[in-house]
Image (cartoon, rainbow, N blue to C red; front, side, top):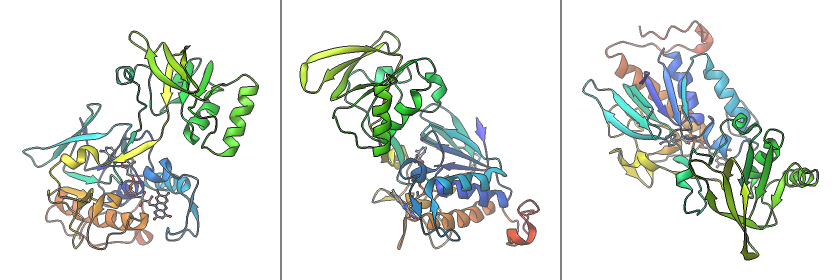
Length: 342
Ligand code: FAD
């Protein structure tokens, strides 16, 4: 059981900034994210796109903003459960909540802050009848640790940047990389398409197009994939491999959180914005893109503001009766900030 003061669901920019604000008030945070890395939409959807409306930064790449947020909150030593989706929540008799992920990891906290953005990003799965049987048995939809593919035979399918970039990256690690795409043209960056073509010419990547994987073969783990050539349905063949990685992008879903008894409006969680961004369930807050209230704007800086007010309210719940005088980090310094209420 992982115990913390504030359990944050979602490690996007809002969740990461909440760690910093909570840290100033001496509250510990643990974050759960369905993605294998922090950063939310900034990392997953547009890491190389410049953002122009972060106060104090005339321009910053979304990926660099994530790096900076991680650097800023590092001093408060947040815990992370990554690559797992928060599935269920149960209120305990002592008022705390237990949140369990789809992998069974349990977390306990008196405060839950949902910073789930557009929802958890679920992989788009190809329509292969036996694919779910092979999940975690050689079929992976995310690459968490490229080292597990060292000296292995890998088949990747997809036509976007992820499929191209990982094929290029793994060509130096895996013993064999095959990239399968149902069209001859790729959707990814031209530079990556050229690189894949070069690696094909030098024999470091097998390129199979237009084609798709239609079945998986193996007893208890992936041993081969069955491929159908798109132009010739009659022509099916097997490619022996240890891993099959379909990379068809991610689609966001509010998912299990929608069943937690929270008031939901237009796929977002209704909060009390006049006060503290608490939901209809006391102790559960919703901040950032995931919430809704009159005048709501889905912007990063709005998420930062909401996270700040949420932390102040969380402090009151965790430390009932303690008075607090707001100090500026520039006056006391982050390290010297004692966080006490006077
Ligand atoms: P998100 O970034 O969506 O992060 C939420 C995280 O929660 C995700 O990582 C998700 O996996 C996780 N999660 C959700 N449910 C669960 C669950 N049940 N279990 C575990 N994890 C879960 N905003 C600006 O201010 N300026 C811009 O210039 C700008 N440009 C943009 C450009 C594009 C292309 C896009 C798509 C968005 C842009 N935005 C911009 C919007 C901005 O990215 C969002 O406002 C911001 O990411 C919201 O942050 P968040 O932390 O609330 O949510």
